[in-house]
Amino acid sequence: MNGTLYATGPKDEIGSFLERDIAGALAAANLNDELLFHEPPDHNHEQELSPDDESEHPSKDAGTWKILVVDDEEDVHLVTHLVLENERFEDKPLQILDAYSAEEGQRMLQEHPDTALILLDVVMETSSAGLDLVQSIRTEMRNQFVRIILRTGQPGQAPERNVVVTYDINDYKTKTELTSDRLFTIVVSSLRAYKTLKTIAAHTDELEHQVRARSKELETQTQQLKHTEDLLCWQLQELSLLNQMSKVLHRCHTEKETYRIVTETCKQMLPTDSGCLYMLDANQTNLHVADAWGDPPPPAQLVETCWDQNEGHIYPIEHPHLDALYLHIKSSSDEGYICTLRNDNGEILGVLYISFTQEPPEAGDPRYRQQVETKRLVVSNLAEHYGLFLTNLRLRGEYSFRDPLTGLYTRKYLEASLQREEHRLKRRNAPLGIMIFDIDHLKILNTTYGYEAGNMVLKEVGHCLQNNVRQEDIACRYAGGKFVLLLPDASLENTHKRACELWQKLKHLDLTSQGQPISFTTSVGIAAFPNHGTEIPQVKTAAEDAIAQAKVQGGDQLSQAKGAE
Image (tube, helix red, strand yellow):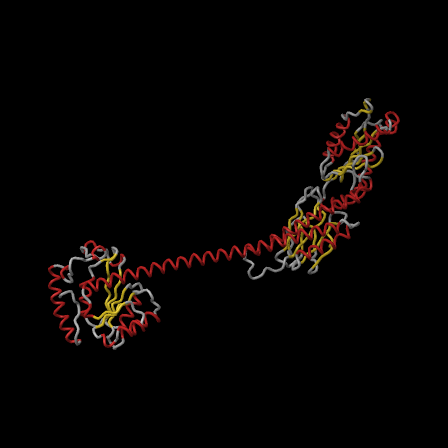
């Protein structure tokens, strides 16, 4: 064959030549495949393309280089198979696909989009069928990777210069110039170019993916930074408003003046939300609206159970001295938040209620929930700040309720406490114990040891009582050397037991004045609700009668009221 696959001349002459050439090639192939397109021994391709024994070839499904032959001459297909089908490139076999028209070639390429190379005839069903297929591959199918080699036996129908300029092809060969080595060389270079393009495309896709991922990450970080910046600005504004509120509050002389200052501050901090400041009344049982902003304030009440509250929302309230309480607010808002105002003992002063605006459609966004939590933190800080101020403000007015010598509550505070306890007892049907301690012969003690010594005795007795009662108990200096203790939730038996313990502690007080020991005694009278009356004043009178009886018996006695039920 002299290394030539195709000859020039009219198509019928080419066909005759091919028939003879193929017949001879097939005969030679039966003897030795290498003799078919044998060139001089300088085969540079032997390391890359090498015919292997068929038993060593992987299956076509294991990964192949797909080469599509599009030509309307069967002989061209036979020769191409003969030359290439046993070759390998980079340890992958070549898979030859056959199409006998441009239309069939397009269909085959759609079925095998990973085709690496097309050996394409120009003149088939039409004189420009091959060129039309090139145009379709590059524009309609948008396949820029497959390498296209034009092979034509009629170069006059498609001049090389015009074709190369006009169409996106990778090489142009006449069938007369293709030897086995040249065909092999074209295949190797085309496959290598295809591999390079795919590698570049894969790297480009990976880089684009990384760029998109990084861009998305940077966008997310930018949004987070912006959100954090907004939160920081908001927190700075919060601190500024709290400082401003603090300055204005300290100019207030009455508690009522402070209510509007608090709600105005909340309005500035939470301009899109509504809220209300509820304060406990003097009896510590009912809530009243002190001030509000935004929507009209919903009715609210303290309840002892969360059951049977069909409308509105229930919020549990922890109280250090009472059973569980619940705040029932008749509000239609789905997003509400309460914050209790407390003094330094944890006792409730009031409730700050916030009704957040309806969640937007993107409420699932975690940033929205973070914003809500930030709002709650703002409200908590404000409530804590205001609770501390309110405690101090009340303490200023409370000096009239504190005995300056002993630090105990005064008689005036006791009377107010009795009214408050009476409301609580009726609501909860709980017991109450009353103790009265009276220093015996206080005038004689002052005369004997001096008034400074007498004051020291009063002070130490007051400290002893205060240091040995529960936090919820109320200890008062009633008058002179008389002290009254109210014990919420204490039965008569418990009141008697604790009175004995306190009485013994007073007996063991070791007091001296100017190096001289001071001796004194106390009388104790006790009574309890409901054992000694259905009204608190009745119980207090019973305790006073009991201590009077102890005095009659000479003092230094513990007497329980008579008539216990």
